[in-house]
Amino acid sequence: MAGVLVIIIVLFLIIARHLRPIHQLADAAQSIADGDMNTHIPHTHYKHESARLQLSLKKMQGSLKAYLNEMQQKQAALSTHNAELQKAYNEAKAYEKKKTKFLNDMTNKMAAPVQLVCRHTDSICRDYAYLSDNEMAALQTDIMHSTDEITELLDQLIKEPAGL
Image: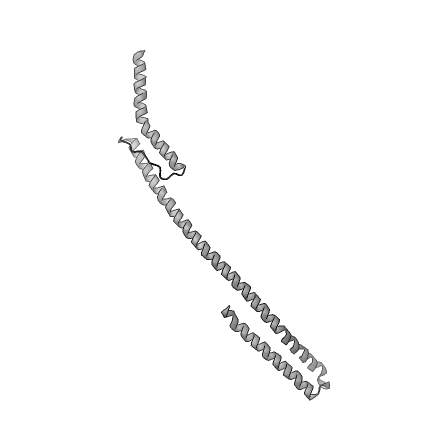
């Protein structure tokens, strides 16, 4: 009975000694799986499966580190591009706002001369027979002045958007 007990203890110690590197490698693999890419992978002195497992874990760890570094670089590049795009979008929005304001201002400036031209042409059409030469000349002068004003505003409208 004592001999069997001694054999069991010796076998337990031998098996534990041979399994210790595998347990250490399993712990290292779990640590890498938890995100610690700098986990030390223990060296094994054996030449069989433990050594192959150790080499495979080191290779996997190196590949994962390289992959994570590449992803971090790509994330940084994407963040930079996103910031540039956001800046360009904000500039385009500001430009669009300025353009809209400019067009509204020009439209408002044109409204009075256009209304004056319309009123005077209506007067001429409606009251042509009753207008004196002086009144007709005054209406014509007002119409000419208003059309000149409209022409200047249209010239500004054509030239200004390039400068916005």
